[in-house]
Image (cartoon, rainbow, N blue to C red; front, side, top):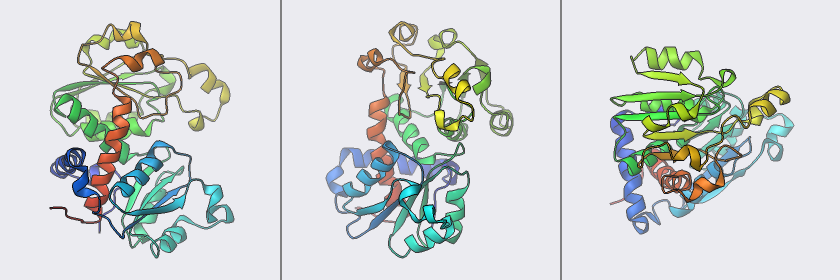
Length: 306
């Protein structure tokens, strides 16, 4: 039995197989429509979510399976003081596989240690968001045709953004990838990411504050929102929340084949006028998230479809 706590839980070869499966699901959805008949997915979301929770539910339904769970800690026995360990032991009696989102870093790992069913980390605090990373990898590979030889700009909240941290770790395993970190001083990418991942592997990167200075060189621009829920000080959030706003004027500086990605939800950081640009890929990214989660469920449940 396998769990997914980090995108690094899969080797590059296993990732390629997973993405290949997701692409096949995209092309032949009818082939997989009953692959999980009789299987049940539990979605244990201690923290609010729209895309991730609904994407998991859509994925399991597309496979013919059933879903149940809760969408906030307040609507679960966590409100009565039940531990994560006890909750997953109980859920293991009901479900075949579980997706868990929790505000505390490491909570899904605690669950996986005592679970008798596969546990998928659907986001833990500011730490990891592996299924968003799988979605991002599928989006990049599908739209750019490769996961190597890329210049990737990551813009916005690089300090608290778990999507950014997971994506950097995953893409660092591919050849000739260069990172451009675009953020204010207060939201720079953590030192441990730079030291443990980039410098340790001699991966080129640079840090800038102005998005306009680097737009022409980017193959991918990954925008993120400034996350109010990660701030302890409301004044700091208000000061930084509109630091970057991507609009058509800035898009005019970019390559014709650059793609814009965003894990969503969007607040103010991408103007709605950009939605009409063919390089805007963030809503296609959402659809790829369903395909890759379908592939992940099949992989962890060891379901083979001929």
